[in-house]
Each structure stands twice: as structure tokens, then as C-alpha cells.
Image (cartoon, rainbow over all chains, first blue to last red; front, side, top):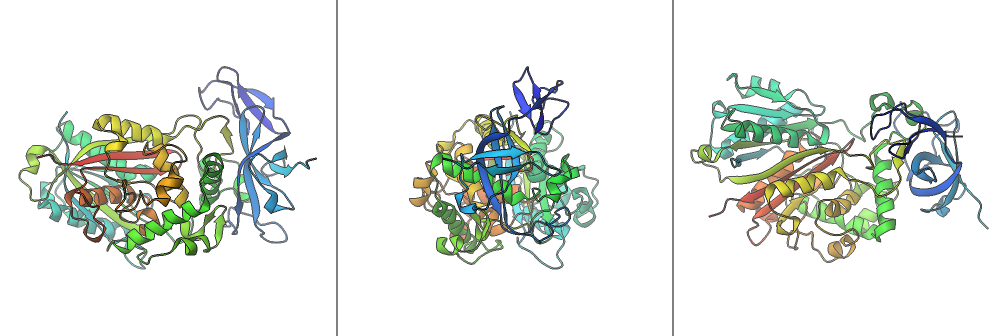
Length: 112
Length: 384
């Protein structure tokens, strides 16, 4: 579950949770974000990012997709997009997003 | 308000060298600007300048001359040059000095910038998992824009092709070999939909301008140009910036749109009055989007405008006539004043092989950078 925060006065939701609203600077309340949304935009990281800070996976670097997932709480959350079929990535793709020990990760939802 | 004129402009050769320091670039550009204005360094009554990564501008007095001039270092990312200009304009209008220098310079190591999460207030995971990469932001912003407004990859390639063609006509540019749109498309994907030749590279260079009051200009030899507006803005809520763990839903705000609108309002002219313009082109998509954000067309019109050659040197709105960041590289502190240098040459009719035909009267410059800062200027040829 993604733990965000919400400012009722501004109707602003952010991730990760922040003590102050970035719009008005006032206090926020915690909110759990939806686990399902749509891919708002994406790209593919084709080359290995510089290390540090990047830590490649045990099998070594392989190109990976990243994007922003738009959630019903009116926030778009940056995530790594895990997919076996990179050619099927498209804007508005329905995805499931979850918190991990690292950054949020999203996976396409099987359609049909 | 007092008019502020640019009486001299100077530039160093952009690119990447083994031994030339950023400060050495700066000294060359300042000396060229002084020579252009026809004044000695001792005539300068105040100076503002900066670099992002190549040292402190006020130390340049060691090479330029220890005249006791008030020299203020500014550091404002991509808006460093613009911030120096704004300070110079205010110094002249406030009566601090009648001749003021603005200089921007830089020198960066090879390869993409490599920021660390903690410097941006982000969790270490964003670096560890590979999200602290600037090219991802550019790919994602233009990908969404292309989807929303029907821009094709070929249009992105045409922007790069034009940049290298214009660079080939600019003796101070880094990349002076023309590259075709097909070669741009085939140069290897970096961050979809952007290929290698669609990106600029961090580099080195410097640019400087001598600003003055109209009275002071009468004592100088350079052909003056009027700086009608110089504006710096930071982002408002709802913009899309690099290294954002989240974005607000809904329409995006744009600091470039805000800065351009403020510059046009201060100058008393609009985008349709502009004869030549320089727009931030960190990558091809940025030039496409900034055309709309700065008010030169509606979202989506770029697809037809660029195909029709509108943004070429001979077109209806020449953009990045000196080759922009794509052909000159991106020394962060220098790019804003490089653009101003180029517009000064164009308005004077001194741009040589890349001169915009028809004696352009009004020019516009725009930089944009992380984390959501923009600087714009409007310049015009002296009437009469």
C-alpha cells in the first residue's frame, strides 16, 4: 500500500507522505492511495544509470521502463514499470502499483 | 522607466577542451564584450555573473583588473545568466552604475549530470533504483505531450537536424557537422522517444554583455540593442519537473509560460511581434514544447509549423539560429547569455552566414532548467 498524505484545504494528495502541503505549507493527514491506476506517461531507461547512486540488480543492468501512474486520489506517482512485454507499454495502460523496499513498482493489469 | 541598452556582447568558443577552464572562457567573453562596446574594464561600474560548476565569478577581477568594482556572484542554475541580467538592469535603473557587466560561464565533465538523492530531498531509493536520471524526465514529458497533441518522432528529428545545420553556420558552436533527420532517428534510443542526437551534452563556454544607460551608450562605439525585458521566475504548484516522486493531476502549470508572459508584458510586445527567438532545447522535445509554452503557437501546431520550415533561419519564426544547446552544448551558467549574444548579433545584422533575412527588429530568449526555473528576455533594435 502506498502511504501518501492529503491536504483537505487544497485537495492536494502527495506521495511519499509529507508533513506539510507543498501548495499551502499547512499540515496534512495520512492517506492510503489506491493500488490501481493508469499509466500517465512513461519512458525506457536504455543505458545503465551512474553508480553511485544506482545499484544494478544481481543479474546486471537491463533496460527498464519507468513512468507516472495516475491514481483516483488525483496524484501521479513515479514508479518502475515491471513488464515482460515492453512493446505493449502505452499511455492510459491500466496498472497495479505497490510500495516496495525501494521505489514504487507498477505492473500492467491483464485486460479482457 | 529608464531604458537599458546592451552596448557590447562577447562569447567564447563553446565545446569541450582538455585544458581551458571555465574561468578562462569567462575572461575571453568579457574581454570580447568590452572590446565590442569599445570601453576599458575600468569603465564598468558594477558586475554580476556566475557559473554552476566552474568557480566563483567575482574572482574574475584577478584577470580583468583590480579596479574595486562591486562584483556580485549569482548562482541560479539555468537562470544564472538571466539572474545576472536582471541584477544588472536593476543596478542601472537604481542608479548604482551606468555601465554594468553580466557574465555567465561553465565547464562540466563528460556525460549526463549525476545528482544525488539527498541533495534533492529524496529518499535514497530513487537513486538506488535508477530514477535519478535527467533524461527520463525529458523522455516522459515529451512522450505525454506527443500523445496529447499529435507530435511525431520525425518532428523531434527535424528539430535536431535544424540545430546541427544552424551550428554548422556558427563559428563558435561545438557541433558544426550537419546531421540528417534520418541519422538523428537512427542514432540509438536513450530515453524513449528521444534518441542520442536529440540530446545536448554538458559542455563548456562563456558569454558576456555590457549593459548601460542610453546616456552612457552615446560615449561607446558598439551598436546598441534595447533590452526591453529580463525576467526570472520559479515554478508554481502543478508543474512537471525532473526528479519528482509525484505530480499533481490535472493541467500542468509551466514556469516557462509564466516567465515568457511576464517578459512580454514588461516589454509591451507579444509573441507575434518576435522576428527571431532562442528557446531552451536541452533536447528536441523541449524546443517543441517551449514554442507553445512561450506563446509562439498553440499546443500541437508545431507538427505542421516545423515540417513547413517555420522555425528555420529563413522561416516565419526562426528558432535557435546559433544551433541552440544541441549544437553548442550546455554549459549551464553560460547558455542564457549565449542566447542574448546571438539575438544581439541578429538584431544588429551581424550574424553572418546564419543571419535572419529581413532585418529582424525584435528578439526573444528563453532558458528553462531544474528544478523549475526560467529566464526570458525581449530585445529590440534601436528605433530610428
